[in-house]
Amino acid sequence: MTVDFDRLKKRLEGCYVTIPTAFEEGPDFSVSHKTIRAYVRFLIDNGLTADTATLLAGGAAGDFSTMSFEERISVAETVADEAGGKLPLAFGGQSTSTLELVRLAKAAQSMGFDFLQVSCPFYFTHTEADFEEFVMAAVEAAPDIGIIVYNTFWTSTNLSFGMIDRLAKMPSVVGLKWATPRTDAMEFEDVTSNFSDRFTIIDNNLFFPYSAMPSLGARAFEVHLCNYWPEWGIKLIEEVRAGNYTEIARMMVDEAMPFYKLWVDIEKNYTSGDGYLDKLCMELVGLPSSRCRPPTRDVRNLYRDKTLSMMRAAGVPRLIA
Image 1 (cartoon, rainbow, N blue to C red):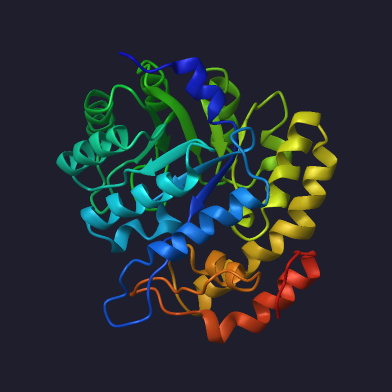
Image 2 (tube, rainbow, N blue to C red; image 1 turned 30 degrees about the vertical axis):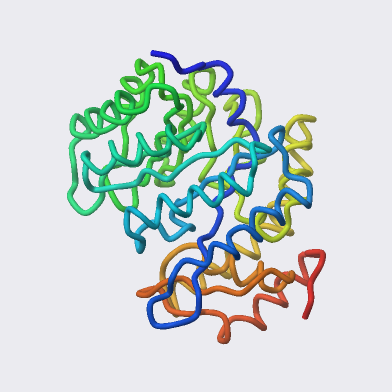
């Protein structure tokens, strides 16, 4: 085992930002590497550093589910090249195949990524023992990088407290991207409070003012807003480190909640997927335009005015419309 656990665990703290994958307009929706570079440059030019953020290439908001293996690798190479070592990098390793996961893990290590994000295989309801072997396959294939386990309970097996305890015995598993169903059993709090010393917890439940408190101890946060408002994410991390939970709560209600409410509106009434609202917001601050690949439908024309109004009300800078 060669992974530097303490270094990687610390390096993962901050905003966890999925870089959307951009596509050319046209019948084959080919990957626009030029636009992906612009996305990464925007984040770096507006203040994200290794002290405040990790970039995820090829996650859900990065359209991993619509890309071939070769496209996923090429997107990761582009993100890594443009980031130029300025920020830590994670690579999305979601897959339904252990054999493909091994290939993704080896590729992530060879490209110099810090982390590989792994979720329980979707479509079939796999057992936790299946998932334990799945994660171990990634650990063995890429011993030099940290593994981030992502509990995607809405598409696959919901990981139990006992499963997290077993994952804690794998030294390469440094991060836990944690989301749970919201029930009276307080599964989110149970795992976070018990394992925040062992893993860097990435809050994927939007409990930021609460999860950042010492009793829970989350130290990383899934932040879509960074893609169009990097300064918001920087301020979030500053307030977390200052223990200013009242201000974090205000930021979530006044500035983040409108984005997520609009996302839910689109999911319920028009199309489903991830990253489409990020990219529309990014277009409205002057970045190149892109839709997601089908079957997610193009939201840009139908939701542009509503998105612009949301951004204005939240005080987003650099709006061009």
